[in-house]
Image 1: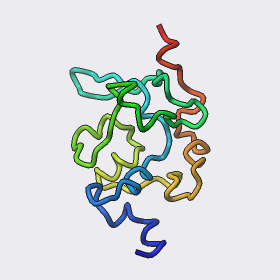
Image 2 (image 1 turned 90 degrees about the vertical axis):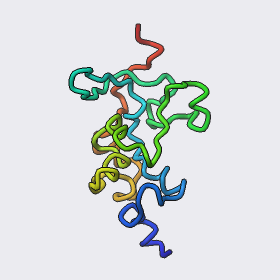
Image 3 (image 1 turned 90 degrees about the horizontal axis):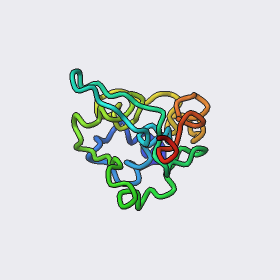
Image 4 (image 1 turned 60 degrees about the vertical axis):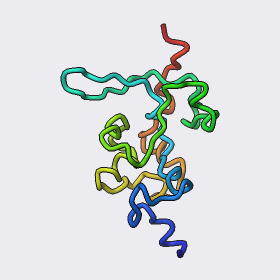
Length: 137
């Protein structure tokens, strides 16, 4: 596979066909999946709060305990290609959700822009906009 083809794998492969490396690279680093969410029982609408997991690095919007996060936070989301309707628990800008819905990635996505900071520069990430869940009563 050429580098150009490999760089655009998300256009040619299904979520199920992606390697683990490709799958992980879909994450834009926005940190929104680490926010506490509320679901309206009547409409099933998902609402994102400004309360983030205590382990979310507020500067990088990454989890420093990513590989062991499930043992620290049993409710932590682990995203799988066959999630189906569960993708609605992710933000509408999330690559996993977009691709599962047959939609393209946004121009600010690091796979498109080539810049891992583009998600922050575009104002998509939660950087500087959250409260830690262990600091909220």
